[in-house]
Length: 149
Image 1 (cartoon, rainbow, N blue to C red):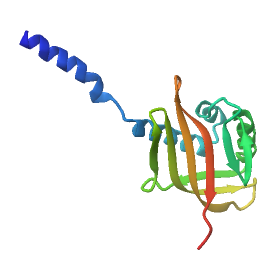
Image 2 (image 1 turned 90 degrees about the vertical axis):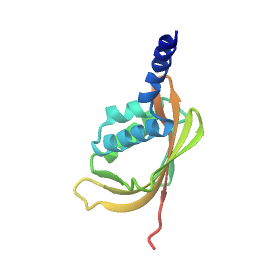
Image 3 (image 1 turned 180 degrees about the horizontal axis):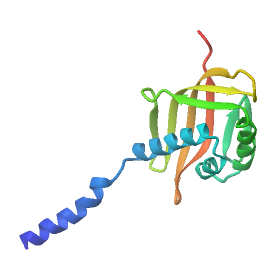
């Protein structure tokens, strides 16, 4: 009986040993989001953005609503320079609930038209993710431009 109880305890603990935390999961999706952005991979971005008309991305001071509109905007931006560098030491994941998280990430965005010198802007990216059956998806991207000091 004692041996049986030990085996049951080990079997129950095994899934926990490999389990990742919410923060680990959200960070992994955020890292994939940045890598996909820098690779100018629209198909990859499509899979990370929520397929909802309520998806919100504020870009250049204007709201972009819905996944398709966001992808169309990115398609144009990807024709030029579009590179995001994240300050990983300052990145934070804030748990809003078991299925909602906010990511705060100080970043450097280099963006410019094709053939033009890109502008470099420091941003605080605030991104909200929701855990859906298919995994964590982005529902809002709210960058805040940091004024030069």
